[in-house]
Length: 312
Image 1 (cartoon, rainbow, N blue to C red):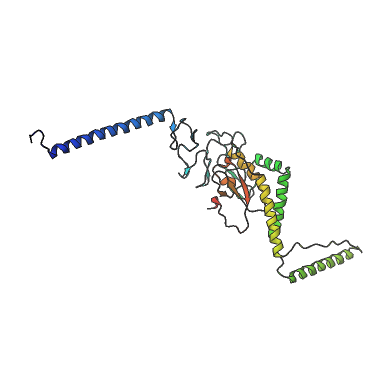
Image 2 (image 1 turned 60 degrees about the vertical axis):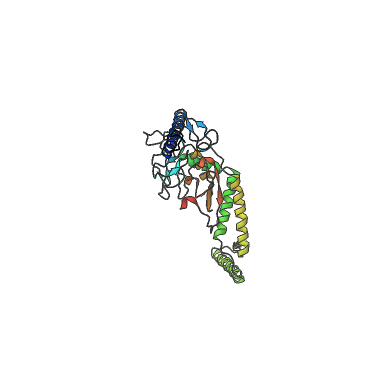
C-alpha cells in the first residue's frame, strides 16, 4: 500500500472537525436568518406565540386566534394580569390611571376629578360605613356613592322583576330569622301567649272607655323545622330564577357593568358574583378584573363553604 492511500487517524480526525465547523457555521447562519426574520416581523407587527400570525404593534390579542400577545403587570404589586384588565385581583387595586373607575369616562392624567361625573382620583369614602372605595357602590355596605349609581337604583325600582326580587329576598331574610317549633309544647305556649296578649289589649281598651274593642288575632309565624326548611328552598329557587333572568351581558365599559350589577343586588341575602372572565366567585363585580365580560349573582346558603375569590 502506497503512502498516499495509507489510512491515518489524525487526518480523519481533522476531516471530522472540519465538517463539524462547517455545520456549526451553517447552523449559526440559519439562527441568524431566523433572528433577522423575527426582528423584521416585530418591526412590522407582533407575532402571536400561539399561531404565529403577525398582529398590529399595539394589539393585545391575536386577531387570528384570540390569544393574548403579551404579558401585563400590575403597577402596584407587580403581579401578572390579563390584558384589558382594570383591576388587580391580587392586591385589590384599581390600576387604570386614564379611565374613571366610577363612570368609565376618559380621565386626564393631569386632572384630580373626573370631568364627566366629578369622581375624585383616589376613591370615595362611604358616608355610611366610612370605607374608602374605588367604585360607585360601597364594597362594604353596598351604598350607592355617585349620582349615576343612585339613579340606576331608582330606575331598577320601577321594574317588575326587580320589585319581585326585592320582595322575595325580604321574605327569605325573614325566614332566616324565624325560630322553628321544636316540640308541641312550643305550639301550646305560643297560643297561650297570644291569648294573654288579647286579654291585656281588651282590658286596656275598656280602661279607655271602649266596650267592644276590635282585637285582631296575631298569627304566629313560627312553624316546624321541616316546613321552614322547605319554604327556604322555595324562596332560594325563586331568587335564583330571578337572578338568572337578570344576568348581566358583556359590554364595552367595566364601570357600567359594575354599576348596573351592583344596582341589581338585593339586600338581605348572601350572594356571590360569578364572572364570565374566569368563572370565579367574587363577593361582587368590584373584585373582578374584567367585569365587562358579564356575569350573574348567585344565592349562597348561610352556611355555604363555597370559596369567594376576593375573600382570601
